[in-house]
Image (cartoon, rainbow, N blue to C red):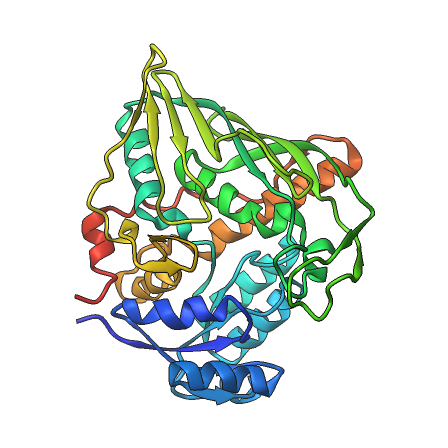
Amino acid sequence: MSKVYGVGIMGAGNISTAYLKLAPLFRNLDVRAIADIMPEAAKRQADAFHVQAQTPDELLKNSEIDVIVNLTVPAAHYSVSKNIVSAGKHAYSEKPFVLSVEDGKQLKKLADERGLKVGSAPDTFLGGVHQQARQIIDSGKVGRIASGTTHVLSRGMEHWHPNPDFFFQPGGGPILDLGPYYITDLISLVGPIKRVTAFTGSANAERTITTPDSPLRGTRIKVGTPTTIHAVLEFHNGAIITLGASWDVFSHGHHNIELYGTEGSLYVPDPNFFSGDLIIADKEGVKETVAPWDHPLGKPNWERPNGPTFANYRAAGLADMMATIETGKQARCGLDVALHAVDVMLSILEAGETGKVVTLSTYCERPAALGPDEARLLLKA
């Protein structure tokens, strides 16, 4: 019988709803409290999900809490995670993990000294379709991955988010907000990255908030970070993959991830989601949609207002991390993978500023594959 760990949530913003709804799916997680610097926000979520509302200091001192999920804004991720670990608790952060490699290394040192686990989202690469893509690659069916493309392109955040200013400031932008999904999936599918280069820019110096019902509708936002990034990633295994990330695009025709192997190609769906259509092409270029395998983290479970039910298992990475306390294995969403992804993203931005090729200062092993049987062990029966 797996031990059940008391979970606290730091930050009661939009993403907290997903963790409050989905963490109870996992057999070793029990959400017990939520805190926010705005007490009314914590109380609203606490009342809705029948957990305790606390101040941040109270949550850090709560003896019933073993691990705290850090859902604060990106600029606060390091300081809050440091406070969590300093309080003697395991820490799991939303992405991006931290905003500097040095901060990540300091967290690692602090956690190692205290024997604590630190991990970070995204965990969507643990989803059924992404793990099926991993299984196909590992089987050699498409040969060795030699190159590929990734694209995360949209019109931005100001038309749907009620307060989108932070998305357009340092620590935001498409590479740090959405890039973690793509880069972490690539690390899982292909391996760690050796060096990068990039060009970056912005289509507009200001953006206007047009979100319906937002009290800030009509407000102008000054853009303080690149909103278009085109990068080239060289992997340690020799693969070369391009990455395009932009919030200056109204329409495009690219697949999210295309991986080109020596025996065929693989078209991987949006790594922001746990499920989607996986397409394989043979050496003749004949494409076929792969029948989904029976993976529990790919089963539809999340309803959306204007679309079909889809798979959403956020907190899977947290459950896996806590399970490693007993198994002694490496957490799939552990600190080393998260820090390497941060290093990739920051190196891309540095390359865009300097025009240079940037060699990464970190390395990680590919996280272990998560097959259907092992995934079932994370979930409640």
